[in-house]
Length: 173
Image (cartoon, rainbow, N blue to C red; front, top):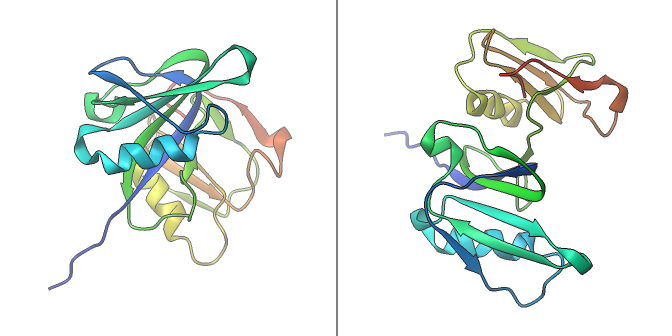
């Protein structure tokens, strides 16, 4: 019998937050560069922690909070919040060896050359899986359009080709 192994990771969304469910502050050993420590605490809490928010404060300090719910669970989107980073727990068949596997930029798309464009993709998470499963190239970006159910995969990213990273219609990230 074949059993698919799923790995926990996170999707990072900069300048966004989520405020449903309970929110509990995570105590850390330091107050700068705490993202990995906060995510590990959330992992240790299992299903009691579905997401983490990381707040940047005056003086460069940071605070983080464990959330009992997530945008994915509530079938909604996180909301815009300058200075806050939202990390949502995800499950996937592969991980990238980092504290988070993807950085999502809502309503932006990578318009550069795509190595693959896949139609009839049912969700953003399915698009992420296609990127992780790519074998003919190193997939560095995945743009999902909910309106067209398409997933564009590329070995380029907003870092390697910033001119190709542009605002997009709602439902594209």
